[in-house]
Image 1 (cartoon, rainbow, N blue to C red):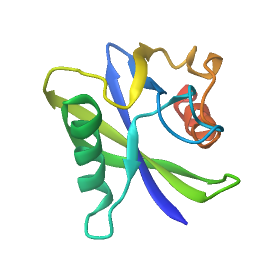
Image 2: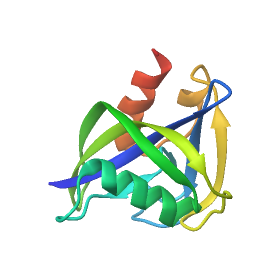
Image 3: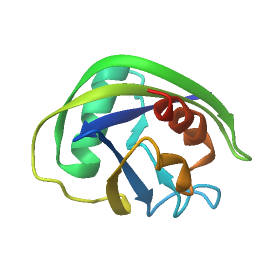
Image 4: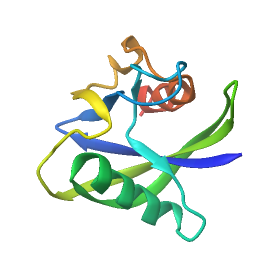
Length: 127
């Protein structure tokens, strides 16, 4: 099982999601909460800070763990772990995504989300 962290970044009561420009066919072009794999030598909080810096050139702070989803894909199983994060600084640039946007919790489930992200989005829609 691969441990993956995802960031819940809020701005003006909306949440950041991004559309993937990389990955296997079941996730390519779909929307997700940004994040990535946890390396063996780092904590989940360190991983989310590193991944957001790499993918968006933004600095965030992991505030707290919220929920997770174990998702079985044809080629792998992931444990996707959602963390509430606080924006600290940085200019927003896309590296691993086609586009991004901030969406309300009422519209988040209207997007074509990666399968692993759907239960996380359902959780967010109930916040």
